Image 1 (cartoon, each protein chain N blue to C red):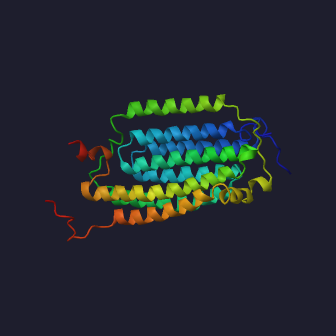
Image 2: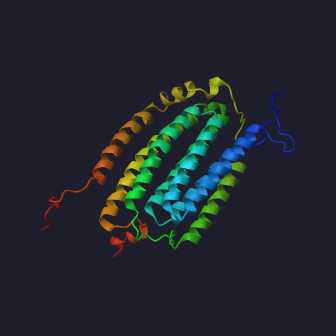
Length: 186
Length: 106
């Protein structure tokens, strides 16, 4: 028996329910990242946020970006963050004082930012917005055409940037040698 | 058919709310790694906006995804260097809390 297009009693389509579910998970997990007292749990909530966002990317027809999100963000950056948490947390780190003294102005600024975003999105005329769900629009061919066409220079610079970041990260995190005292100051 | 997921604005509103949450975390948290995680949240909000615009505006088809891939690459580089800096500072100061990095203020 085929499922109906619109769910009875709610009046929403299946993709609406999926969007609300994934968006709710994204926002709730983002709140968990920001407000969590335990920083390890913040890191795990970050993984949940990124995973739910990958689902929304698939809904938007950008499956290759969702794959890159899972590989790069969840697979690499989250692991890097969790390792850094484990390397830098000492027992004396205060758990209660998770926030700076400027938490109230920061909350005000964030709420104002959200309001300004809402006003800007509401008042902008986007023209004809149509979600084309055809394979020609959501496949990888237009992405490749854009990435290796107008964005080719940015693509090449990104590769150089990653190389520089890897070398810089190794140099910064390298344990200094015991006899390396630096230059003698006069 | 789809009243919510078939329109551009809900994605942009979700992206704006995620960016606001990330900016609050960046401004309010004391732990340097929490601040870096908030930056990741903000970068992901930008990715979501780029992908939504690329999916809904026909003349931007493909460009949103290309933009998002470049942002992911830059975010990976940023996380590498940022976490290396945090670890290097932690080795000297024995604390990950940014409000105790006040050597230059004294």
